Length: 168
Image (cartoon, rainbow, N blue to C red; front, side, top):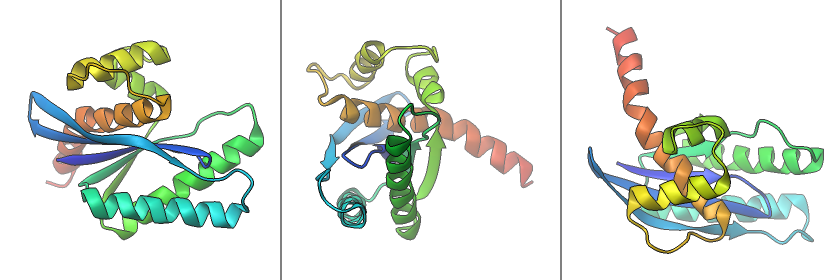
């Protein structure tokens, strides 16, 4: 199973592609950050992000797209832009036929580290440990996106089992 994890943002949108090879073996396929020019007009930035996401979906053909849900931001403008970026990602993923899943930051931390209060350093360390990555994942947005993908791989089987149980 291929999962594209997204840490949404308009200036910096982290992405990570992870593949489950077997129940106990997962590998990182790609990680990085999509950037838009903060001085450009909002519609142009959203269109640029949309094109980049479309490209990732075309190149990697994930089975699912997992997106970190925005719950709280001190800066309202930043929160709005993150929400708009997440909306673009959700729309492109759905249009391409991918399953879309949203996870809160605490759900991601719990799935990857085992504790919802984990800090950025603990998260990055566990992402690297789970994927046998020796070097640090930079920028942090890329590491966060890989963590979101790992969260989906950890939780999707249970969610599928619950959904299938209800349909029988």
